[in-house]
Amino acid sequence: MATNTHATAKPAKPTLLDWKTYRAEKKEKKAQEQERKRKREEDTQDVPPAKKKSRNVCRRIKQKADAERKAAEWRSTRSEPDFGDWDKKEKPKITLPLRGAEKSS
Image 1 (cartoon, rainbow, N blue to C red):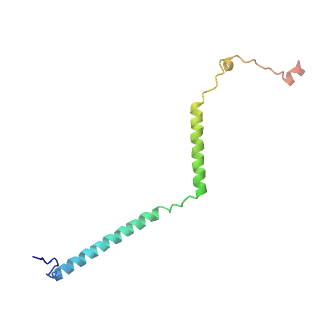
Image 2: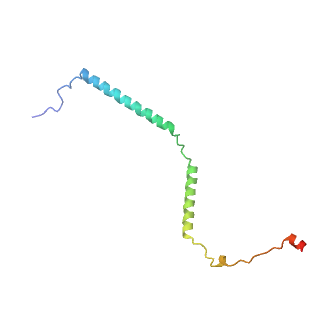
Image 3: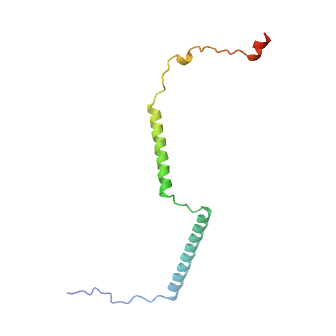
């Protein structure tokens, strides 16, 4: 036996109460959307628009970061030079005769 798959009953006509609730929900949804838009506009006014950096500027920033990283790596592998006790030796004192002292004596 073949069954009828199509809906034969018509959907019920919306009543006046249905229309009122539909309109109230729609109005409430619209008010919420406007509130969200207003908040978003206020938030965007506080923050200045971020200007996109040019390709050249990005490249220079990257190069500087790479150079700093390489310098730090180089410094970490490099050991301080060992001068031994050279800098601890007593250095000879150089005395220069004063010009005024020569004439007075």
